[in-house]
Image 1 (cartoon, rainbow, N blue to C red):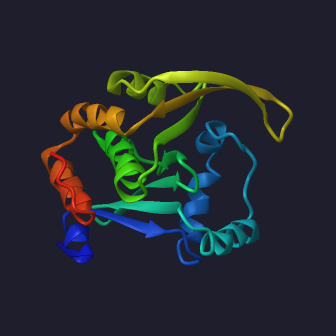
Image 2: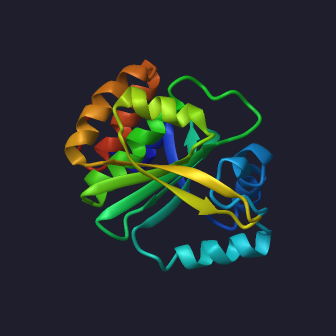
Image 3: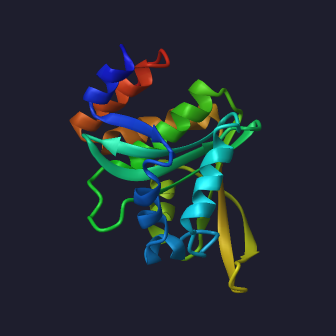
Length: 201
């Protein structure tokens, strides 16, 4: 299956670029996104463009706009520059998320980390007051492995929950997450995953 065929089935990952900078910043600088980020400061466009330029020469560190059925829906990042990969995401503000989007993002992140990059662990951080992803992680069986206190740029301290899964854990997580997807999302993910030689559902 070609990339264009996978796109037609519903999922496209658009790398951060100068062209999508305004869209990304309009999401990233939204109040509720900053409130649930480790760095709550507003990012200026010149700073973002410098980051995008550095990304181009940084292997195994990906930041994408996730486009679903032609509509930009979320930002997803996977840092697989070491055996302990990290991932994160935030949804496009303004509209209620469609059912299944967050589990779909988890499946995409896990596929990139384990099937594409071959890392041994996939980790994520969730702020203690950000309860929706905590509930989803608990439902999917993604365990909390630790917690730490972080001081933000504003000087305030926040509690961060640390999550981690390995390749075998991801297989179990995926078997639960796929049940939360619509039929269209399942087919779209299968088309996406097939680009790396894997059928998933």
